[in-house]
Length: 596
Picture (cartoon, rainbow, N blue to C red):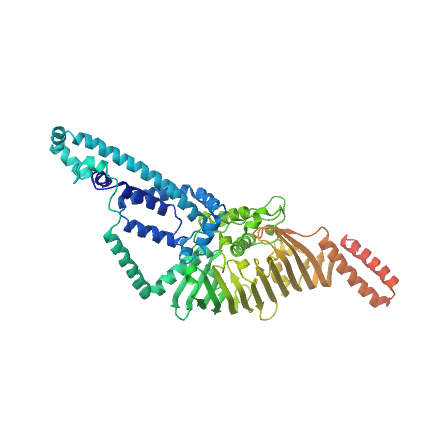
């Protein structure tokens, strides 16, 4: 079959234009990443391949070879894209990325843009080599053809004609080999190709009209599965484009860490869409409302993993991390890795990072390589070249009465404002607020930067009045922990970067029992322990300052003994109080050392 195609290529009316167009278009398509990353380029190249009179067999072979080569050269495509998008041609590509229609071509994807240059080079080289090969064969046959007696003698024999017909479809063509060897131009367009493209566009329009919901459901499910890393189920979707309303019914996202449960489930999600900027690939959602939201619910059919799992940073030697405190540290590190990826997606790097003299700041190149390691080269985009409006903007997000299996009996209200993929393009900062209706849990998260709020990511997380024994059960060696019973507060407030945390964590215990070996037990009304979180978000270092717990226990014990002494002795004078404090401290030290 292949030999017959090659024979037809040599003896048919195939001009250099047909060969070059086939090789270049086949290579360009082969070097592109997935269709979802560059849909406009895919459709444009496929349409050209059909409309131009390119040799389809040669285009298919080139596409197959270049596709395999693209997998091997994926890092090269990525770095070539970086050279183009973040180099001297930045202005040109920034214009294309934000232009109507061209915004759908995927120029912001580093692999897609780099693949264009590599595909052009490979396709041009392959076309040049194939033209030389075909022309050489034709000239050799033309010389043989110029000797009619010899040519007719050999080509007329049955044992030559039969294998030639079986293998390459025959030796002779409609034109002489001398004419074919000197052919420079050929018919540039296929009339039937133009008709085929027109019919295909009309067919797709009708197909979209009748199967719009099915297509949207399939596309949305695939995108969410790539983001979630596990199965996503959607019952149905409804799109009313004139009214700008999109509804999702029966969403269930399997938990990658526990495939028999859902990390999130919603009865319905209603999106209010603005259609004005769709040609620029800008999705503006005036509001997103989640109804019947739940997390941790049991799945009827267990899900399955999709794509590579998030890879948390490896533990550092001689550094205290989550695995030294939490029994389920591995699970939490994977969840934190996923959270870090989401935050980094909506915290795009800026070119100014490259020139930042601060050695602690993560540069554009470092951040891009971190994303490439976590998500793969094909998923990294030059989002800092998006101007005007962000790719995706959610003005308001509301999910009321969300149920969490980990927090039975507590309902959460979640609100988001000005959420976007490029927060720096908005006047307002992106915010997420989570409140439990019993006021025990609160979270305020400001992500990325904005034109009005350039201060970076900020977090304000508070737990109030939690049952300490329920939390203590999740710790390693929980029975040996010196604090038991009572209530527990947690406070985490500060600015942060996902790649380099530097956050103070305050743990407060109320009406808790202190159990010290050799010193018995004592009840304290209030005990505060400062903790520091540093390092990457998906593998934080947990550091309790030296002697912090001892000083906190000593302070709580001294105050308790002081209060008791004052009650017994009635001492109110400052000097007397200071003396009592010293005596209480001495007594506590003797209790801690086992001297009763």
